[in-house]
Amino acid sequence: MKITKRISLLLTIIILMCNVTCNTYAETTKTLLTSISLSDTSISLDIGTTYTLSVSYLPTDATVKGVTWTSSNATVATVSSGTITAVAEGTATITATATDGSGHTASCLVTVDPEYIEVTSITLSDTTLELDVGETDVLDATVLPYNASDQEITWKSTDTDIATVDQDGYVKGISAGTCKIKAISSDDSSIKAVCKVTVVDKKAGKISKLVQSKQVLSKKKTSKNSITVTYSKGALSNVTYEIQYKYGKKSWSKVYTNATTKKIKNLVKLKTYKIRVRASKKIGEKVYYSKWSNVIKVKVK
Image (cartoon, rainbow, N blue to C red; front, side, top):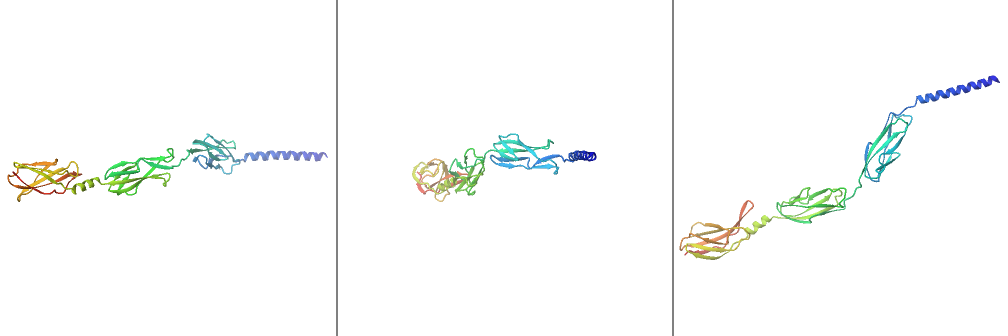
């Protein structure tokens, strides 16, 4: 009986010694973490959206894997089990801390963008413009609502041969005709405002008016060696009148004035003179003329 008790006691001691040895071995063979990392180090989110981060562990066969999550600013972004929720505009740092006691951390900077406000309409300072060839005017565009996130405008002309527009809204007349200038929202190309542009060639109009006009010699007065003639006013303002006169087969002589009455002096007595007049004006770099008036004959006293 004593032998049996001794054997039982010996077995118990052996078992206890084995358990201590095994536990010590298990402790000495535990694989510790050397680092952790996140799938992203920085992200941008819109308010109300979510994003999930994943964690990588090194070494991959670490015995204990797990992290706790914290946010540096929960009013901007919260985190739960790696899932981030954007709360309000601003920045927050999301940190994962290893749970094995190693103190290893990894973080991600979260930027929450302001609420995006879409463009609803565009208005222009003018819906119609009339320009002369070479003339420039500017259109002002207003994006609505005033706090829309994207205030950018793209300007476009439907016919650049008639009028052009730069990206500041300056419109230039190129040639006579009509076209449309469009202000298009960069946020939504279907949102636009339109100005109808009419380009007129005022210079050509003036030239046409002048060259198609004709002076009328209506009155004449003779005195000693002179003739005074009166004629109709020119089609344009500030014109110069050219009066030509001659007798017999002589060449035309000429005098100039800005008035509608001219006294022609130093004429030959008793000769009959032919007289005519026309208007002229410099437009741009060139001088243009009206048609010649009727020819009158006057005998000098």
